[in-house]
Image 1 (spheres, rainbow, N blue to C red):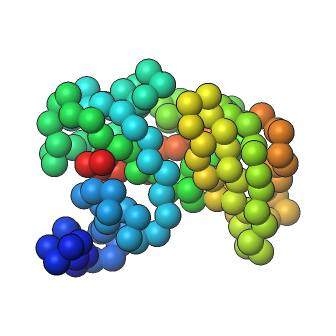
Image 2 (image 1 turned 45 degrees about the vertical axis):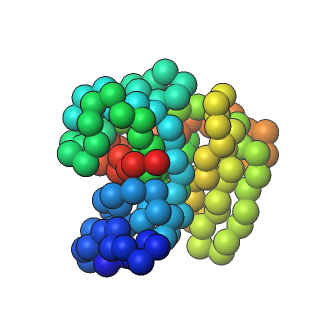
Length: 150
């Protein structure tokens, strides 16, 4: 489990807490994450701060109308040509601000029109490399995110 200020925040296996954190503290405690602000419109839809609606795994811990954050792990964001994105995936576009080479991966800071997120891509010969100033498309599967309390 994960403790916060002497209280148990969440109980579960490390994998469960990484994949489905209950709040921002747990999501930050186990790994890195992007947090996209929004409002829960239904049990499976969040309206992001930029007005875009995205599908999310069913949410029971918060109520419709609540302000929420969508936790999106950097390694779960795909970067590149939208032609290879599933038709029902969430999609955003942005501009690469920085790239940090980490050996087996590259971390990109991508400026969207309303915030900046991190994307971690594999470093392999068959994976395209991007540079500061490049316009890129981003996407992720619906089950790649978790809705958390801010």
